[in-house]
Image (cartoon, rainbow, N blue to C red; front, top):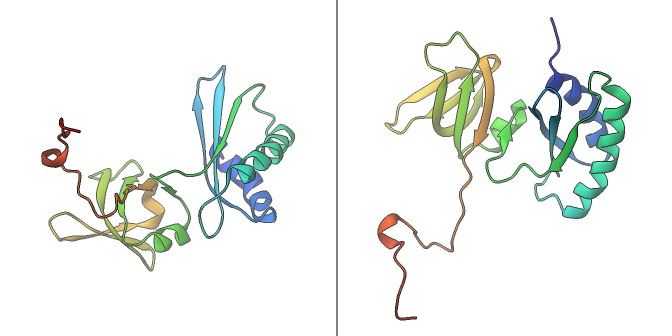
Length: 171
């Protein structure tokens, strides 16, 4: 079985992140063949990685890639927090973020490839998602290609629906 670039980079970077007290959320390879962009998403176990931690990580991530990843000559490296739409990769991620609205993409071969619902975490080897109509979908963990939460921003309990999005012209 051929190991893809992301898997190879995860294999190299995950133990280093742990050594530095960080979690490797995921790695993405984007860009073009001539100029790939490596995106490394890191966080602390409790969440809330700092800018200083990301700056420090940039150095050891770059050094590890240079040493262990000979198939790339030049690349752009982006090291960042996972952001509001946090990717989910590890089994623990799906349990940690149970209760969040989650988008799941399945590997090719499934009758349906995309699901969006409230995650109820893993039950055995299946991710349980509550769909908008209240039905529960059970997705085999090993069939998940990619997943992320849909971030929510709390504006202090205020609802900013379209009806509320008008500006007060008097102020």
